[in-house]
Image 1 (spheres, one colour):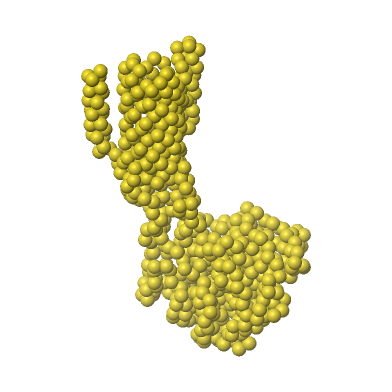
Image 2 (cartoon, one colour):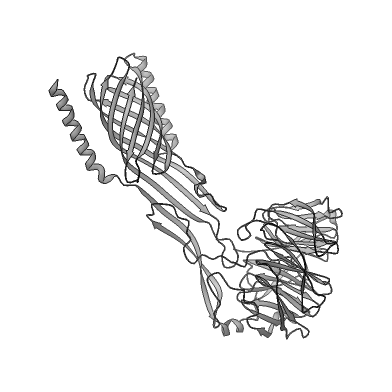
Amino acid sequence: MNIKKIILLLFISLTVCNVALAQRKVEFSSAFKAGLLNGEADKAGAELQVVSGVVYKTWFAGIGAGIDYYSGFKSIPFFIEVKKDLQQKKNTPFLSVDFGYNWPLINKDYKLNQGLKYKFQGALYYELSAGYKFVLSKSLSIALSAGYSYKNFKEKDTAYYGIGPLDQPLPPRVDLYNYKFRRISIKVAFWF
Amino acid sequence: MMRKYLSFFIKCFVFIFIVALFSGCLKDTATHTFTYSWYEPLYKTKAEVIADIKSNPSQQIEHPGKIFINGKYIYLNETGKGIHIIDNSLPSSPKNIAFISIAGNVDMAIKGNTLYADLYNDLVTLDITNPMQVATTKIIKNAFPDNLYASYAVDSNKIIYDWKRHDTIVLSDDNLPQQSWPGGVYYNGNASMQNSNSNSGQKGVAGSMARFALVNNYLYTVGYTSLNVFDISTLQQPDFDNKVNIGSWNIETIFPFKNKLFIGSQNGMYIFNISKPDQPEAEGQFGHLRSCDPVIAEDSFAYVTLRSGTACQGFSNELDILQLTNISNPSLVKSYNLTNPHGLSKDGNLLFICDGADGLKVYNTSDVNKLDLIMHFTGAETYDVIANNKIALVVAKDGLYQYDYANASDIHLLSKINITE
């Protein structure tokens, strides 16, 4: 998914929010989330996220961003979140979907060499989760959730080391890496 | 109330169970695709290669190397394959008339009607009295033991006469990026920066990238670490005479001037005294950071271009002008920044520098402390130049250019022979 499509989705979401707000049937809500990411990597990763959007009856729709550190790769996911409370009660289980773009934040020095160029490109991010929300006060609730988290990004390394037998420069060697991380995400979120 | 929490915990259990089912999907992958090029050597027997050393029909110029002007003819090396003969009777309309197939050829020198060229390890001597009927007169075996291609030693019976390029795409499932190179990709350890120049009194004029130099009755050649001396008293029957260790490695170029040899390496410039022609003696040196460095010299100054790049490493791209008053200890007069300088040539006060992708630059050197850039020709990736007899012959990636510099204020292009890839 390219950035234009994501921006379009965000725009549509905000438009829907504005329409809903105009009808005064919705209210704003935000959340701060922290979680653990566990997959094939030797060590568990971590993520922090901020989400903000609107609540309409048992639905929440918003936009979010965060930082995701897993398997030595940092990235910033930008996403749309849709959450559905399964009951119209204060304490309720819920289902949630995040869908967006994963922007890699890699320390590019880790293999810096003369004659080597590298380029990183973001790709798909999504998370499917379920959890339970407890209301702590009128304006604060806490939610525990677990889910399946996927992040993807790409790396292109171009090396200009080769010299042909006739002393002519060889076309560069190009290495393409497509990283796909599939993890379990366990999160705690504070909604206000 | 109790039932409600029980229900919740049952749901949590179901949820965790479902997530556990998904755990088979918890796989991290780093799909790795890489593309690279490599060359496959194509062989002929040595007898076939030697039989092919003759004036063949002209061929397209593809990978030009060293140049040599001999009378009305330009001899242009086709790297690793042989020598083009170009009739330059009319510099405005040069004609590619013949091609001498010499497998592995990189360097050459010409004196009179005799051409000396390397055939991998061997020194080939050719009679070029009639360029259309070139004939081999002598081959000295193993004259250049350094001439090896990376992982391919030269077989005594089979010789690499050409290379076939392969472009390969490989898919793998590495989990971590790797920087290893697949086999078959070549690195030429003998580097790509060669130079040299003419010597007074000789008929031929070499470019500034040569590794062969002629002085009177001797042919001097540089290898990776050594200086070889050949006696050419009998022009077409040269004899190996002596081998001198230069005391450095990555030797690239040799430039004769009077009774000195100026030798360029990736580590510095070395000066050898050839008052005793068959026994060169080290006389001075000027070190610098690792770079490629063609060098030319005159009475008072030496001009050295340093360049960085693939085979040259280093990070310097400049022209160094050295004072030669004290020949045993040359001193730096001034450095001038350049883009990626290769060959250079000087005629009178005009200094021509091939500055790689930045084209050809022409300087007035009346004041070495303040060189004046009087002309800059862009658009060609230039490699080597010979300024001789008011015509600058420039080898570039896309062609062989000739510029008329009879009038320094009106240096202009005379002709161009296109090079095909």
